[in-house]
Length: 88
Image (cartoon, helix red, strand yellow):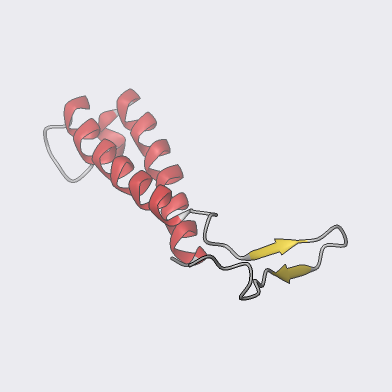
């Protein structure tokens, strides 16, 4: 997947982590749309979103399929393999 998707998922992890922390201290601050604010609601809403964004981030942030490598001068090189290197 693209780097934009992993960036959005990473920002989601950071933002929901902050809101979860704030909500566990002051539940009414992050669950303003509901009259009965509780830490359980905060944990269910923001904790659930934190888990979703975490899974999205870790699934999209793989480096194994990246065929680009930086050399010592900072230039990006693309790995190529000859037919002799490929095993059948």
